[in-house]
Structure formats: structure tokens, C-alpha cells
Amino acid sequence: MKKDVRVAPSILASDFSRLGEEVRAITKAGADFIHIDVMDGHFVPNITVGPSIVRAIRDHSDLPFDVHLMISPVDLYVESFAEAGSDILTAHPEAGPHLHRTIQLIKRCDAKAGVSLNPSTPAEAIGPVINDVDLVLVMSVNPGFGGQMFLHSTLEKIAAIRQMIDSSERDIDLAVDGGITTETAALAVEAGADMLVAGTAIFEGGPERYSENIRALRDSSQ
Ligand code: DX5
Ligand code: ZN
Image 1 (cartoon, rainbow, N blue to C red):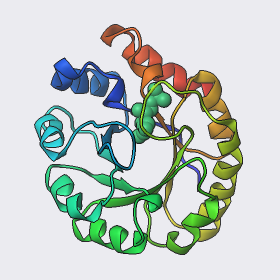
Image 2 (image 1 turned 180 degrees about the vertical axis):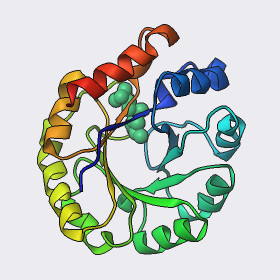
Image 3 (image 1 turned 45 degrees about the vertical axis):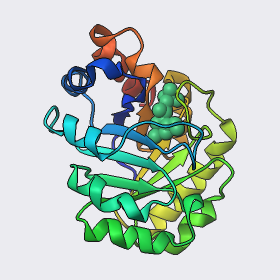
């Protein structure tokens, strides 16, 4: 069942020199999750943060940490990210051959399990694990960088996954990640998403704009 739209700011677009402050500011501004993009320079052509940064910012927010693992291999690091304070750990099926094993490992570490699909990965990739996941994260850009343009071809996939989730009758969040603006948020939610991951659109303008930026995304999708 589709829920009220929740907003997950991606701290990739925040000021990394003041990360703790940024996490506090975005929490106060009305975010529902803190989205943390983990990149390894191998699965994606960029490098960001590891478990020590997740741990360092953990005390700066009571919100769930939604940790997006764009790394390969992934299983080796699941436990460290869970121990560092991740509430949701999301892995990519394209990153390795044993998605089911990765999901079970995440659950054994007491985190919720997410699966993220690249733009070129079909909705069907979720089918075999629909009864195991807590979140599906549809990438609406190729993962690796913030500030890219939303790929409209992913809307059909969001709609197909919405149907799969509804038929499963399980409580699964359907998130969209990449190029989210007030315009594209409306399209993604119309297609069936109930969670919006956004970096640029939320962090632009600095801390005094955060609550307005979050509200604009929520309002555009109602
Ligand atoms: C891209 C990341 C996204 C990204 C979103 O690989 O997964 O979370 O930070 O940034 P914007 O909203 O700027 O597209
Ligand atoms: Zn992300």
C-alpha cells in the first residue's frame, strides 16, 4: 500500500566540511530519513564515505539512516555499516551474484533490507526477492554523482514495481533517487513512489532554505 510521501535528503549534496551541523539542520528542517550515499570508486566512478563517517554523524540525528551502498563486493562491509548505526542498508543486484544472500545478511545484522535498481535493470529483478525486502530504491539517474538529470524512462519501472509491491501485500517502501525536483517528484509519486531521495533540490540555498525545499517537494507531490 502506498504511504504518505516521505523525504530523504541525500547528504552527498551537503557541505562535507560541516557534516554534523548539516545533518542536524536537515533533521530540524523536517526530513524523514537521512540518505547516505556510499561509493567505492569501483561499482560507481566516485568515492564517498565509509562506516566511520556513518558512526561520526549518528549522534547528530534521531532519524533513520538510509544507507545506499554503491559498492562491490557488498557483503564484506554490511556488518560494519550496520554497527555504525545504519537503519536501512540498500544494495544493488548489479554489484554481485548473490542478492538473496546479501539481503539475509543485512537482516541478520538487524537492519532493514533495501534493493536498488540501476536505470538499465528491469523491474523483474525485484521479483525473486519481493518477499524479503523492506525497500526498493529505483535509480532515476546512473549512480555515482549528484546533480544529474532525471531519466523519464524510469517512470514505467516505478509503476511496475508499485504493482508488484501492492500484490505482495507487504510493507515495502518505494523510493526514487536521482534528479528529483518539484517537477520530477510529482511524476515519480504519480507513478507510485512514496519516498523521495533528493540532494541538490534540498541542499541548494543553504540551511535557511532547507525546510522550504523539503516542503516544496512534499507539496509538489500531493
Ligand atoms: C546518486 C545518489 C543520489 C544522489 C542524488 O548516485 O544515489 O542519492 O545524491 O542527488 P541529486 O538529488 O542531486 O540527483
Ligand atoms: Zn542514493
